[in-house]
Length: 135
Image 1 (cartoon, rainbow, N blue to C red):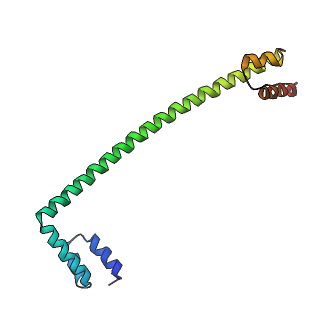
Image 2 (image 1 turned 90 degrees about the horizontal axis):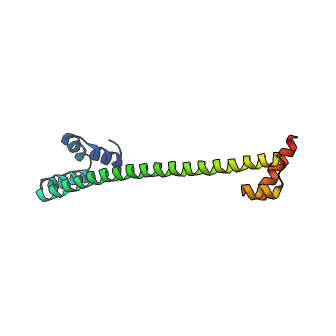
């Protein structure tokens, strides 16, 4: 009735005592495991320790879920803050570029545009070439 592994899987997932007993007929090691399990479950101290362990695992799981939720919320908050900061920086840079375009269109010289916008010279030169290409 299946391999040893299959019998053990059925034993460990059995929902009734009858299912377990049926498997002991096929495998002496499963019979020994069932006897040991019954012996341990009759010992009040072992049962108490088991119940404490189950309660600890449940609390631990709840604590981990809470920590995950808090971490997730904190991560979302940080992500939004970083996104806003990047958006402000990009907006500020776009405004400086637009100011450089306007100054160059009005005929201001390169040094004045660089001084006012504080953009890198290569960027102002690229804007100037772009404007010359539009003409």
